[in-house]
Structures are given as C-alpha cells and as structure tokens.
Length: 397
Image 1 (cartoon, rainbow, N blue to C red):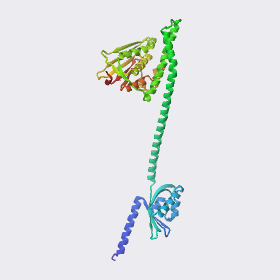
Image 2 (cartoon, one colour):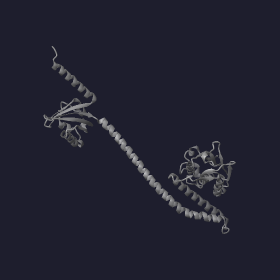
Image 3 (tube, rainbow, N blue to C red):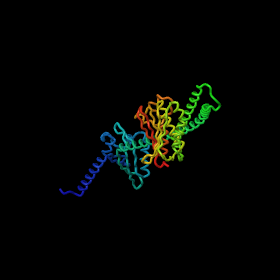
Image 4 (cartoon, rainbow, N blue to C red):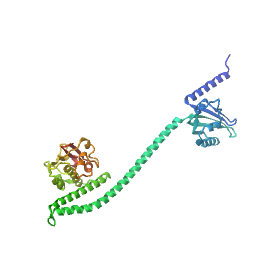
C-alpha cells in the first residue's frame, strides 16, 4: 500500500515527539501545559519524576502543584504566576517543593498565549530539579558569610588591640612619671651617700646598704626603660636618630654604668678594639642601651671572678661587628630558638639573682633591625655566650 502525505506527516510528528521526550529525559527537564479554558494541566513523565509521584494516582492539576510547594513559598509563588499571566510576561520562579520524603528546589519557567480578546488560552513551560545548584550556591554564600564574619572579627580584634595598646601606652607613660620621680630621688641620694658629700656615714655596713640601694634603684630604672622602649618599638614609634659615634667611648660609658654590678661579682671586663676602628653611624641612645643590655646580661649570667670581653672590628665584607662574650652558664639550643622573644627567660635564668623582665635580647634584636642590622647568638651550656651585632657597611663612617 502506498504511503500518503498524511502518513509521512504522522511519522514525522512521531519522530519529533520521540526526540523531544528523549531530550527531556536526558536533560532532566520536564514539560508542562496549562489550558486556561478547559482548566486542565499536562505534565510530562519528567515532571512526575521530579515530584516523585505516580502519574496514575495523581492526575496533574494546578491545585496539586500548589499542594507540593512548602507553605513559606506558597503565597509568593501563586502571586508570581498570576502576575506573569496578567502582565503578559514570562513566568520564572525557583521554590522548594515536597518530593516524597525530602525537599527539592525546582526552577519553573513558562509563557502564556492569549486570544484576540486578550484572554489567556494556555501556558506552556518547563520544570527542572535545581537542588544541587541551590545547595552549591548556598555553600558559596555560607563560605562568603563566614569569611566576611572572620574579616569583621579580625577588624574588631585589631581595633580592640589598638585600643588596648593605646591604653597600655598611656598607662606606661603615667607609670614612668610616677616611678621615675621617687627612683630619681633614691638613686640621687644614694650616689651622694656613696660620694660622702656630707662626710662619712659611720658604720661600714651603711656603705654596703648604700650600694644595695643604688644598684636596686638603677635596676628598677632599667626595667622601666625596657618596658617603655618595648611599647614604643611595638607601636612603631621608636625613631632612630643617626649620629657619628666613637664606639670606644660608648663602650667605656656602658662599662662605667655597669661597674657596680661588675665589682659586686669581682668580675673583669676587657675591651678589644681593632686598630684604626672607624666610627659608627647609629642612634647613640639606642646603641648605649644595646651595650648596657648585653653587658648586664653577661655580668648577670657569669660566675664571680669571671671575665667578660667586649670587642669591635670591621670584617672583610665591610660589616661593623660588635660582640660581647662571657664565661657564663650559656644557653641550650632549645632556649636559643626563643631567647630573643619578649618576656622570655631561659632555664638558667630562674636560678639567678637580679632577675629582669626578659626583654633585654628582644629589645637588642629590635633596635638592631631598626638599624638594618642583625643580632647573632653563639652559646654553649656551662661554657659561655657570645652575642654579635652586625651593622651593614653603609653604617661604617
């Protein structure tokens, strides 16, 4: 029997429908059509699969569609659809629906066709399960919110730290004034008593007590200076004022300031300055503080009667080297890793008298950095320690 034109058309429509159904199945996109005049709704197999309901037991209807939507989304979904129909624009929503025992996110799109009188005839559209997309977006949003919260927390903590640092600076400034005034009197009067300005003291024990008063007062002054300098350094307010320094004279001044401690322990301080040593361009006050910290540490951690060596030279690379060596208790390799941190004291410290704040080497290290220099420590337990300061060649005059 010969094929008719109608048979060819029917065959073509069948092939087209089969292709459409196959493409929907592969893409997971369902097709739906709402007839406004007959008030009937058509769902493709993919729509039923998305909602996980049986086609035979649940004939599609607009009421069934609304019943599958979560109550929180129900009102705005219905209003969005009605608005799209009335305003003759494309319908596009994303909402949560009930699919079996779980929730899914679907994205529904649709377009409405009208007759010559402007009345809606039918609406056709698609629906797709976008749960994975929504979950991925939610994870990204949560991650962004967490990062924003973390950034805000960091900012808050930075602001709190800045306020705390400001309060600390104000406190230290006030403490400095309140403590320096009586300490100035203690140190000044003890020096007058040591110099016998108004004659002998009487009992020889007074001489010993006067030395104790003076050394204790100077210790407190140095501790206060260390704390105040630490505050300035950490706040970035310690300014280096370069000048030309004759290091030999500065070393002598440092030894003189530490002479009381040296004599108390019957120690000897030797100075070895290389011939024709050039001058150093540095901050004089900072340099004196560096030498005082190193010399006082050497005195503190060396046994009675030991020797301390202060040396200076320019090496073959043009660096200006200053070193302080002692024959003291030394520092273990473990302690050397943290000894230059603030408020850090190594194990031997806790068995020594005249304890300090643990700021000495930290301040030395920071002051050297401000001079674009470095501090190196070589030490062996029960043998001794050498701290070497390395100034760059551009600071050699």
